[in-house]
Each structure stands twice: as C-alpha cells, then as structure tokens.
Amino acid sequence: MFRTLAAKIATPSRPFATANLRSFHGNAALKDQMSRAEVSGKRFWETAGIKEVGDRIAVTLDNRVLKTPAGNPLTLPKDQKHLALLIAGEWHGQKALLKSHSLPMTSLVARAIDGFIGNADGRTETLNRLIKFLDTDSICYQQDFPESIVKAQEKHWDPILKWVSEEYGLDIKVSQGITYVQQEDNVKARLREIVNDMTDIELSAFERATLTAKSFLIGLAVVKRHLSVEKAWAAAQLEVLDQIERWGEVEDSHDVDREFIKSQLASARLANIGAY
Image: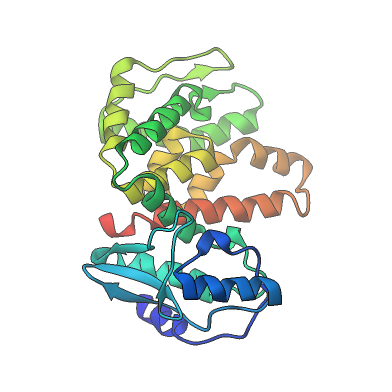
C-alpha cells in the first residue's frame, strides 16, 4: 500500500485554488510561492513527497520541507516513514480549495511536533486536561431506559469496560443515570501512567481521539488499537445513532458529522500503526 502511495505522490497534479496557507509556511522561497498562490488562487506546488533529512524523514512540497504552524520542520523518525507517506498523500490529494479537515494526519503530527516534542510542560498540561474526561466519561453514565439504549450500551460500551479491566486490571465505576461518579485515585493514577508513557505522536493521537469521542476510555481504546474506527464511532455516537434509528437521519448534518468523526478517529488509530 505504501509503495503505491509513494508512487502516486510523486506525480504532479493539476493546479487548484487554495485557502489561507500561512499556517503551512516553509522557507523564504516557499513562502513567496504561497503568497503568490493566495493572490492568484493557484496551486503553489507540483509534487508532494518525502526525503531523508539527517536521521529523519521529511515531508516535502516541491522538494522543500513542509513546516508546521509553529514553523518547525515536519519530520518524523525513519521508522515512521509510513506516516510521512500518509501526510504527503494528504497534500497530493488536494483537488480544489485547500481544506484543513482533509489534512488530519498533517495536523496530528504537527500538534505533536509543536506541542509535545521537547516540551514537558505541554505534555503535562495536556495530560491534566485529558484526565478530567475520566470522571465525566459517557461510558460511565449509563441509562436504564429505553431498551434500545440499554442494548446499545451492552453492545458498544460494556466491552470497552471489560477490556480496560482485563488489559490493565482496573475497575471502572459506572453510574446508572446522572448520579456523579468519581473514579478511584489508584485508577486515575494508573491511567495517567499509561498516557504519560505514550510517545509524543501517540499522545497527540490520544488527545484527538478523546476530544473527538468525548470519552477518555474510547480514546484510549482507539490509540491502543483495541477498537476499529467503526466500533469507536458507534461507541462515541451511541445516543445519536439511537435517535437516528428512531427518527431518521438529518441530511447534511448527521452524515457530515459521521464522516468528520470517522476521519479524526482514523487518523488517531493510524498514527500508532507502527507500534503494534
């Protein structure tokens, strides 16, 4: 698959109108190209690719290294070449206006580079924010009515709780209804250790999965590759899917949300593909 992708991203494609590209500036020459692109509405690069830069793999546009929003080179360790190819593929695949939502892997890796690499405070701040999701995790607040919701919880949520128990030996408290439930300190401490041990890219993926699913436990199951994208989406959208089942789907709303959520969860899951 990656050989095929590598061949495709080396092939120039037609010019296209572009959105604001300042967040993806490169060196002076590339910035000049981008300024012209913004004025003319034309595609400013012919090819997207990858190349070795020292002991790392860089993503390139017209052989110039792509930069993150903070201006850092978008490079990866050589054992994560597959991620570099995926990012290059995102840029190669732009057909019309540059759409940020169609660059999920680019933004995920850029977040890791700008926010976490060599930034212990950034990691700690993010971890502190994400651990708060545990006490309000939707999986921990289950309903006993209607029957369709109860069955959906048994199908999509209970297996996640079972996995956490078997994989990490943790007993997650569950409330029936809206009664507040606070997880034990030892449970929080162990889950904090698990997240703290993540690589920078894995942490970025976990952050995205947790915020997308609005669930610490679903996010963890995605990044640890316990859940497929489909299963994670179904678990994250359990109540919405029940409403759709009963009252139907709202066109240009539910379907758009579905594809966006799946793309975000997919990028989070793919970011850790080399670790398992």
